[in-house]
Amino acid sequence: MLFRSILVLASAILWGSAAAEPVDSSASPAVSSQPAVSSESAATAPASALDMPIEQIAESTGGCAVLDRDFPGLREHPMFGSFKRMTLNQIAAMSGGKITPEMLAQAKSDLSALSSTATPMAISASP
Image 1 (cartoon, rainbow, N blue to C red):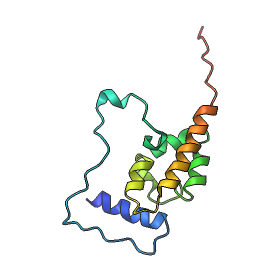
Image 2: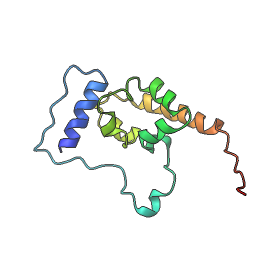
Image 3: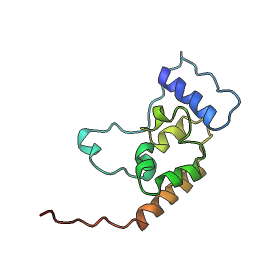
Image 4: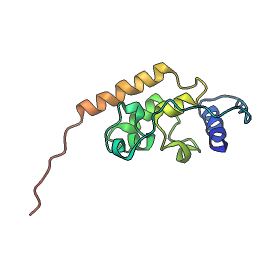
């Protein structure tokens, strides 16, 4: 519950809200719409770029530019270290509407364009 409260506060700060809405600690925890990941499915690629960890997007070629353009200030946020292992879909669900479906659609389009223009790495034979 503390981690969720921190993320709500971080989202409010990140997206310019003057004050974070208090989290009702007596309410039952939200049920994630994300399916549980088994060790077998963890090795497969995510269904969408929006389901990749933000950290992985940032490490990809052009990923930082997409994050910076579509979500200004995200990587510079003081809580980035806490939420960088989450996906864009996950932080959008906790953003209180600050990350809109339109923003996610734009990021998905931009990230898809990156992957379609990426050139495969040449595999060289080792002697």
